[in-house]
Length: 525
Image (tube, rainbow, N blue to C red):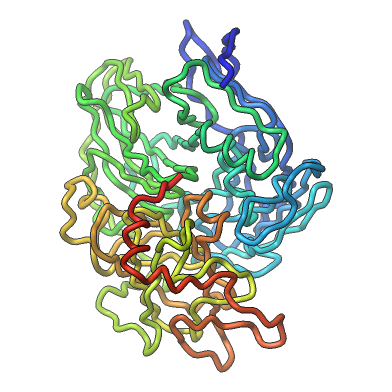
């Protein structure tokens, strides 16, 4: 690896005082009169910091992160997505569950409870270089307010694009008088955390035949680092005693949970408000550490009673950001308990029996040197499970101790397997009854989740959010059938009238003890 000979201090939309990079909020695009109409591009762009440079990253609107989209329940989101990238002659242009098409792109509305069919959030569609696509999706009138994000999701190139910075936040806004006063009055801070990993990105770029992306880091030890709103170790300020609401988006694409925590010297307190854009029922839940899974989000209330300089660290004990607490002290009361009224699609299912035939296993396993789901690599023509519209669906998730399970369209409720976790911080963060759209938990057992499929029919994508795994086949799909549908586990169902297809790979050897043993030692990145 080359070492930078000249260090730069160039960060996007930042201000610097005596060498300190101050946290800056991304620009925002707001809906109006029931619509959010905008154009988003993906294009090559460079960015750098005090000891790194990234050249020809693929960024949304050419900035890191892209603009924050803010809309309301009931709004229609219309995005004209323009691919301004170029087709590379030497790049891998095709392949089944291989890295390919580095400059084809699309958008995934991660966390949005919206349709998985075009012109909405169907990630099987790919926009070629020089082409465009008009997305349009209606957010349900009862969509819960919350924090989400948008990123590219073309099967084969998602790791390359997200891994180098292509992401933006998407917020469904809180209506008036919905929140408790302490939350509504708090300063609202977005923290979009992105993980830059030079080693893995370089490997992906080599395998995909990409000659554009180049990541350089000064030094030979730490070849990965985190950015917050596109900035390296920025500083945010608050007054002693002030309550702030922090919306944390972990726009990650690799294995580690964020493990967001204040340093041991801090007297600051954190209280969980929401996870994956869904308010918890037992707010305020005091937390010391946030094991936010890859792709997950957490909204927290933060208060620091004492003036001082504090640091926030992440999973490898690197400094993620700094907090300066200064100025006149504010007198603030402790947080008052609050429980939101959930919309119908978040009806409590902890005591509800799943519909007959809709209790299925979804298991991450090793498959011939890769990872797969239920012994099958991804095939766009085949559905792993079918779901009768209106059913209460249960999934028994195996392998989420190593693989972050993400599900599109429908958030799911934790109903089993999270009550007696050995780590106190993890046990506090993940509790029965909580809702998520991505989960990774250090447990030796299975995790049971439920959702009710009574809003959107059609495709529901599911995959490992380690995007190198997803690009190489650790993805599948369920099909919610509105007419004459039935619940079937391991249906391997092909849509009638479509191309006859079988799973790309079905490796029976995955079921053997030998492959179970090998699986434990396969690299995750």
